[in-house]
Length: 220
Image 1 (cartoon, rainbow, N blue to C red):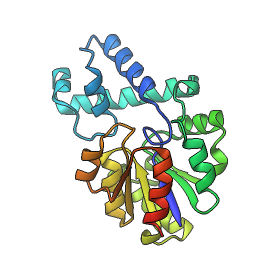
Image 2 (cartoon, rainbow, N blue to C red):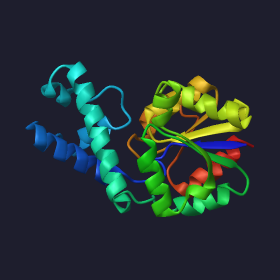
Image 3 (cartoon, rainbow, N blue to C red):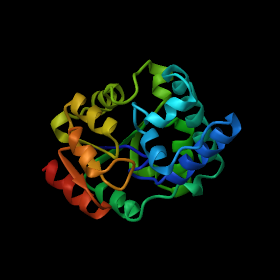
Image 4 (tube, helix red, strand yellow):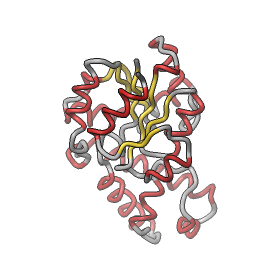
C-alpha cells in the first residue's frame, strides 16, 4: 500500500518562511503587506484572496506569486532549520514505513525539498519525490491536476484503491480525487477541516498520531 505525502503544511511547517518571503517581497516591490490570514490563503490556493487584487490584475499577480515561491525556496535552501517538522511527524514516518511505501508529491521545487529532507534526516523514508521539477522535465501539470500522482502510481505499480494522498490543502484533496485515491486531509497546515472536507477529503486528521490511525483504517 502507498502513502503519498504533500510536504509543506503536512510534514514540515514552512509557515514562518512563507510569511518572511511574502513580507520581504512586498517591501521590495513597495506593495501592501498582507495580513497573516491572507498569507495563509496564498500558499496552496489557486484562487488568491481579494486583497491581492490591489497588486494589479490577476495575470500580474500570478507572476508575483511565482516570484514569492522562488524567494521561499531560496530561503529554505539557505536555512532549512526555519522549516521544522511538525511534532510527531518523525515518529509517524518511522512507524508507517514499516508497513507502507512512502512518497512525496509536492508543488515545491526539488532543491528545497532535498535540503529539508537532508537537514531533518528523513530522506530514507521516501521511495520517490514528485516535485515542481517534473513540470519542467516531464511537462506535467501542477496540482490539482493528478499528473504527478498518477506518475507515482504507474512507476511503482500501485492501484488507486491501495493508495492515500495526504495533504493540507484543497488542491491536495482535488488531486487525490482526480487520481481516484483516498484523500486524507490534515488540519494543522494551511487549510482547516471544513475546507478540506468541502473539497473531497475522505478523512481529516487533527494530529500525526491520529493520522497514523486514519491511514491504517482507510487503507485496510
